[in-house]
Image (cartoon, rainbow, N blue to C red):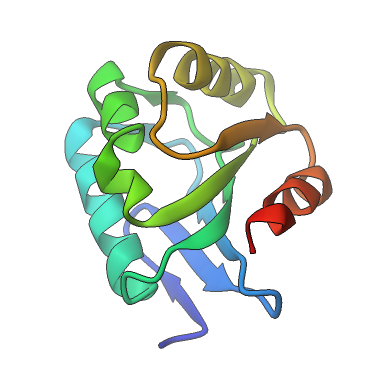
Length: 126
């Protein structure tokens, strides 16, 4: 497995604790097609091994309702053991709150303002 990969949508790496980190590229507006591509790319990168994940959404502009539903589906739960959403901006906080309140993810998901807090929470799923 590669140590780090950059896709059209995000950069991914696995740290020394076996946590998957995903950081979306700047100013993305994620559609359903993007969500499908992202979950597929993540599965390929992790070789379908579920890991606790730290997902930085601080640079996202928007996520369609269809994409939010896909990220909450079993397809995403097959890739992620849990997801710590790192917001860090007012826009991404709104995205995270919509996701958590409306989409009902099939895996544990929680939003955090800092990466450090997200990592602390995700460690319980190692």
